[in-house]
Length: 423
Image (cartoon, rainbow, N blue to C red; front, side, top):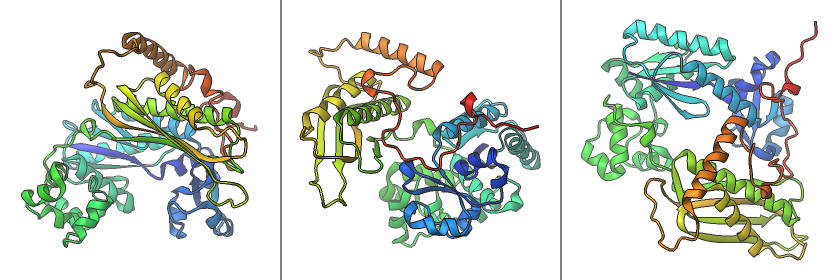
């Protein structure tokens, strides 16, 4: 048996932990630069506030309904996620964090039926008491069915935060009520493809033949199909790696016009791409750097920077990626001082596993020395915090021209911002 622990409305819940007055008030969290709504509490959802809605369009409605608005505070969310996972690790020897607010746990040997459900309630209660974050636990024989169970556990309060699918009757009932687009691993395009062929629910999908699914959705679809039948065959660690990774930001107000500021931003994006590549144990063979001015300003000339760099040997090294990104930007920089860039970013692509890199006989880089230096820097950053050691060109590693007008404090990571109690 597997369990999926899913934090409810995680970003909003983190903001509520340190402000009890928000517990019954609608809450939304905004994306970088306060651009769009990326998280909503249940009360905000009930008001009809759409996911991804531009903040400037929804501002009047939010104010009219007394909705609490917060800029994204990823430092707080990351630390709260760490606390949830540390508590969760006490309940199972098998813990796999799937995202910032989700984790799979192995529950074999912890009982069956009501015994297992009661153990699940103990997990949910402990996390809620220990962190203040409400969570839902879905329990089932496969990870995909555990996702299905968590879906129902969130939707219906009668489950008490724990939904168990442990027999054929419950499995069939759950699949009949679940839209095909809500099945983990199907995706929007595949859902549309299936709906055009008359497959509207997870149950409809499960009734198809394996050969038909293989022809339409390849081996990945077959794994999902088998999981819905109760056959465990998906390992989170074996999920396909991202073929490309993009890190980008929009800049507030008029944008950035100084090359040194854009360089710092691009260097930071390249460093973030390096970290993400290492997290999925892969390297990239090429990189694209881009920056462009506002498309909505007619009083100044538009300009776009877009340059691709190919690496002779696939890499995830921070120093190599940052140097290539900054070099590409400098090569395309106009130098006339007339342009202000509203957005910039770095895309790394042509990825491959770090264990299967094609070497180059004439490679001028000492890869062994490079790896030792990177390992030392990564060890310091793990101990001292992200960016404790960084390249000089990355500057202060602070967001450039970054709008965060509704930011909350770093309650758990900054001693100067902890909650003050008046006696």
